Amino acid sequence: FLPDYTAYTELLDVFRHFSPTPVLLDPERGYAFTAEELRREILGRGLGAILMSNPCNPTGKLVTGDEMSAWVEAARDLDCSLILDEFYSHYIWKGDEDIISAASHIEDVETDPVVIVDGLTKNWRYPGWRVTWILGPRRVIDAVSSAGSFLDGGGSAPMQRAALELISADHARKETAALRRCFGEKRRLMIDGLRALGVKFDVEPEGTFYAWGDLSDLPPSINDGSTFFRAALEEKVIVVPGEFFDVDPGQRRHGRPSRFRHHVRFSFGPDRENLEEALRRLGRVIERARGQS
Ligand SMILES: Cc1ncc(COP(=O)(O)O)c(C=O)c1O
Image (cartoon, rainbow, N blue to C red; front, side, top):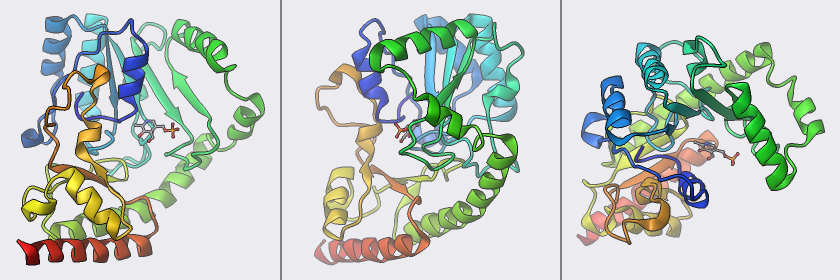
């Protein structure tokens, strides 16, 4: 799906047996995509697997509840694997649930074609620990273990054992409750602060700690991702230009303009004080550009 996590570009590029088929999500619809549309794409294009981050990095869009149930049903009926990257599934801002996973819609883990990927990097905030896991049919787990062992020797057993306590349901729920209080406030601060500066949002983040901003109403000298990135960097604030998320394995677009050239991804991961300072600095960048236009 476009846009999605930047690293999928390399992933889909390296394994040449895949023919990656982009599915476009539309800003005007808040990146919504129905199960009916999913069925149409799978059947029409003969897709064997769907890969997506849920909640999505960068848009923060979340597929959940009956909608996810219908997605899993479509995957089951049409025998198309659904590979769901749930690295941000503890950062949920829609509804009352604290952790969202497609796991709750799986009827039989051995036969449902659903593979869930998660790890300690974001949901537990241990990026250096390098422990990740997958949930899916045994044959998939065996294939991934054997590929891992062939490619880099596989995971480190002591690091995996040490992670067991962290991933216990009780610990994870407590951590998530604390995380929701802290990040929920930062989310509001960021969205309101950026809106006051003239940044628009196609969708308020329903998950993740990112805000996917549309800069088209800012002065022309800083209203695309790369010019804004450079201007912000001069104030020592970093954002990620939207076009990086326009996943383009094999660089098929040959440098043609991206649909997301007016977008940037802001992160509300840093401490509150840093976010407040960043908003002040971005305010200065935008003021200066207004003065010059
Ligand atoms: C959607 C998504 N999946 C997985 C990861 C995994 O990150 P890492 O390789 O740092 O563990 C990230 C990190 O940004 C991400 O955004």
